[in-house]
Length: 478
Image (cartoon, rainbow, N blue to C red; front, side, top):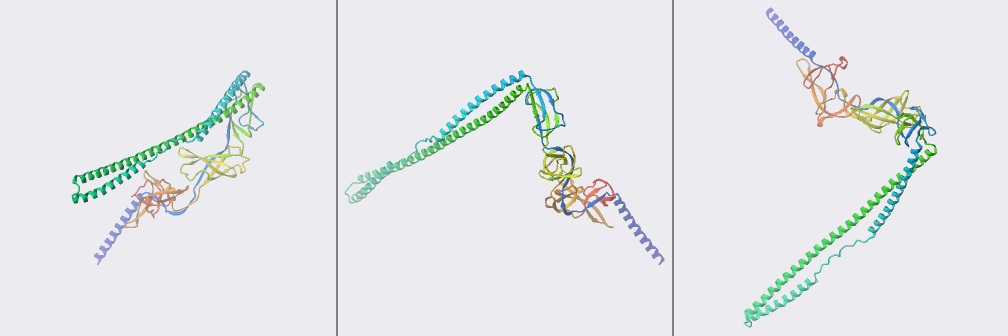
């Protein structure tokens, strides 16, 4: 009995030791396995939101050019605010140059007036020619006529002759049977009947040939009439195009006439003012830049100043990541400037590298009287909310050259508890916000029911055995 009890104790001890070693070895394997944190797919609402910072700037600017060549003798400074009563800059021009320019402008004016007269005469002549073409009757060849009367009369005469000959042949057959007339006379009448039948076939052939000739002539007549009509329409179209081109020339010459007249008026004013030209502001403006300095020689049309139009129209320029695809033109945005919050509208989106530069217009209906431009602003753009049946954290979404995918955890039973194995599921993405993205299975595949991997302390791949931990237990990368 003592022996059996000792053997039983040894057996139990061995089994316990084996189980302990097995458990300990599995625990060691679990300790070496990558640690991952997971989240579960669930429904919810996608509310995309984008935030960025930017600078308030006036929406409308204008460039001011030199109306004439000369030397800058006076000019406002950058940062000055001006209105219609203020002189922006003055240009001094040599009187001899002004007189030469006036003579040249008067010559240009006379040339333009002559060209206007010439183009006007050409347009009148072209219009009269168009009316002539439209009112002129369309002349076409005489339509062909089908003449079959002669053939019908020939057929009718042939039919009468054949009927008379058939009756004669019948009588001769009776007489021949009685022995009154010879066989040769009957044969002669039958030969004459055959000749009449052959002549009838010839008449039919000539009749069919006449019909075919008529149909060919009719087709030729119709083609000729259609070609004549097309030529007429082409002439009308070409004439209308010529009149339209002359109209374009006339409008261009009239614009040249207006510009030359204005130039002559300006030159005469400069001559009367002793060669000094003063350029005034068109309204309330803020001078933001100058391309020349006082004393500089400038040519006509050269840019001199850049001015901000003070019309209470402002915009904010901000940079957003390209992934913020929910931002589109017309979307509302909140603009925080100090303690004030204004409403704006996305007016332009300009791609620049991996980001989008978004321009947000602040309407003048809001209280923007205190804005000058240059203020720091914090922009928040809210996209349209979208319900979704399957949402995952952005950190769970991965991508390769084929498609997006997620890693999820599959529990596999073992001797003591479960193994946790990483599996891969390919997905398609839908709407997203800053934290979550809506997904569906690729090509209609079902989404996994296990937790999706959102972080790990070392790289993992499909088939890797891992250990589940809370997101607070480590700081790692996916």
